[in-house]
Amino acid sequence: MQAIKKYLAPVTIFAVFEVIAVALWLTKDNLFYFFNFSYIGISISLGIFMFIRKNRYARRITQLLVGLYMLIYLGLICGENMQIEGFWYYLFTGVFEAATIHYAVAKIFGPLLFGRGWCGYACWTAMVLDFLPYKTPQKPGKTIGWIRYITFTASLIFVAALFLAKAGNIEKIMFWAFIIGNFAYYSVGITMAFLLKDNRAFCKYICPVAVFLKPMSYFSLIRIKCDKSKCVSCGKCGKVCPMGVDVTDNSRKRKNGTECILCMECVKNCPKNAL
Ligand code: SF4
Ligand code: SF4
Ligand code: SF4
View 1: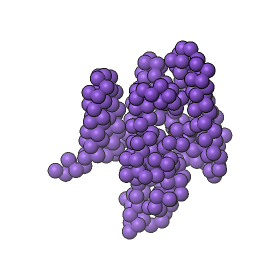
View 2: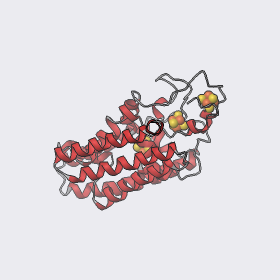
View 3: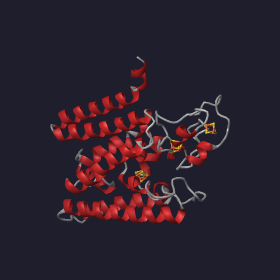
View 4: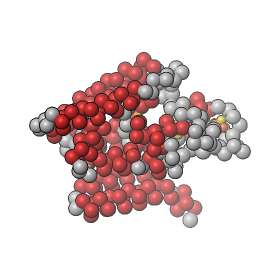
């Protein structure tokens, strides 16, 4: 009974992904969805299982399993543009496929349940950025988050222009947009991490996907909460947080609340088990 309770979270996550996998397989009559969502569900459940077993690399292993699969298999081998422009592309064509499903599950409706879990456990851009040396910001944060609205609008205009210009071979353009887009994300992300001494600077200021993620994760069901009766205000959680979240404040309006990537660094480091 104890063991069931202990491992309820990974089992539940696995079950949720299996429901999605089977539902999409049957409704879309495509076995790919079954394998795709089963693989992602297994990877995430494995990470949570390892976290419960106190494995310090649990999150990174899940991030690499999902991130590499999406970048190399789905993106480069299958030629699916899973970036934001791929989402616009499928949305404009009115097809509920690949990037639209991915965005719906991971970045638009999913965050109502698991917040920015995508950013902590699956994103292939952050998968690389998290290898850099500035795990926590070494400089005060900047007020340049408005840049993400520019990159968001630019991606929308880019795809809209392709449709308006009736560009031929749009699938091929999307494939190359994926390659060039990723190259740009990694280049800008790594440069910003070193300039601002913060691995996650790209996430905080540039990433267009955060335009979806932030407002949706505000309502997230799963969030880190602080047991005030245990907290001794030592400030350790703030020091280890890569996203500058004031996790001791339980309100939804807490400082940088919509930046939380559920990485669990604060939980692991709280000396009083208050989180
Ligand atoms: S903010 Fe963007 S780049 Fe950063 S982890 Fe989330 S989706 Fe990836
Ligand atoms: S690390 Fe724990 S005890 Fe210290 S301030 Fe954070 S929640 Fe409170
Ligand atoms: S350290 Fe805690 S508050 Fe900060 S991003 Fe990770 S889980 Fe969220």
